Image 1 (tube, rainbow, N blue to C red):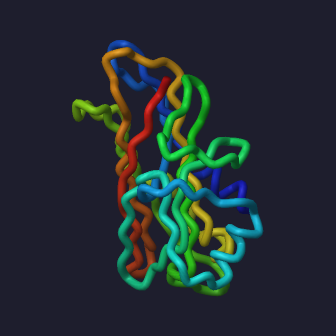
Image 2: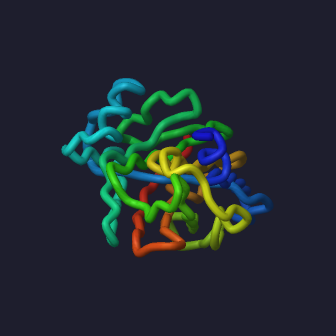
Image 3: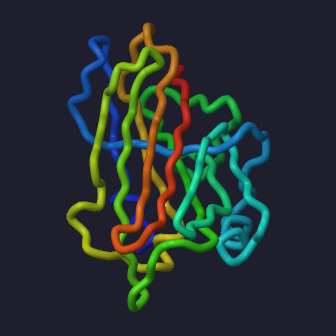
Length: 188
């Protein structure tokens, strides 16, 4: 089910020289640190009650309504951490990973969340603005919803674009919990 959550939150971004976006799929972020998650057990310990918040890759993140974020970072498809430079290459997806220590309003082991993303270029040109990536789903497992993963990939780059900015929001459709923030990444 964890893969379903990751897939449902995935959006793909395609940039050409004319800055048009013919497709729908994208990303997430952290703070200026060189530390990266070591492995799945490190991530799991954060989920299971680690009290230290670790925000990496210059991701800005804020939460409200009782949601607590234990970790936020960028990774590649192989789960290899992205270096603090937030650099990827054309066609190589980058993922925003958010791990919650507590949060969503749970009913019978299920939660109902929504997610939106806006992706723009360094000059403010909006390439993608998706309202609710979970609009077709009533609920998902509360356990799986503790780990949110959003995807961004640039399939064609324009030399005039210096970097991309992702603004994201994840919210509880049946409660007051919200996570929002932004991050930037670069394409070589």
